[in-house]
Length: 132
Image 1 (cartoon, helix red, strand yellow):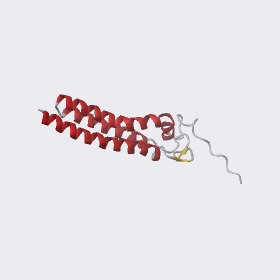
Image 2 (cartoon, one colour):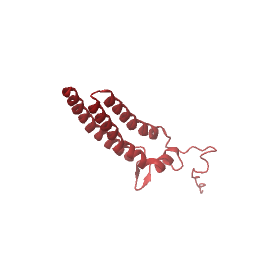
Image 3 (tube, rainbow, N blue to C red):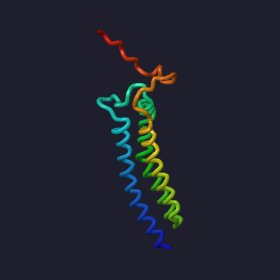
Image 4 (cartoon, rainbow, N blue to C red):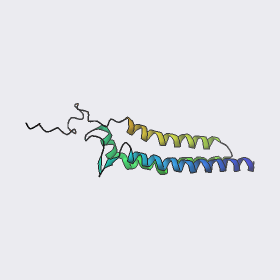
């Protein structure tokens, strides 16, 4: 039985270390990619769903990516090692993958363009009239 526990612990430790890298780069990808910007202003258009999401939840989504992803895998590893079953490690890995993919998919799916309709009309900046 000690051999199985050791194997689970070793595999779980390797997977957790990989999850640390994935979570770290996922957290950076949020700040550089969908919520990235130049000089403190985001690339997404003012009043767009993406800019609203980035301003309200960017730091929280980064926290889900980096310590959240490795933490889920580490807990799965600890439980799997204690119980000597692979199930908890697989569940922890699956939850870690979901915690990695959902914030990125949400940000990438949110439109970077301003939607001029009843809901967003008040938040979209109006273009100034052109001066002849």
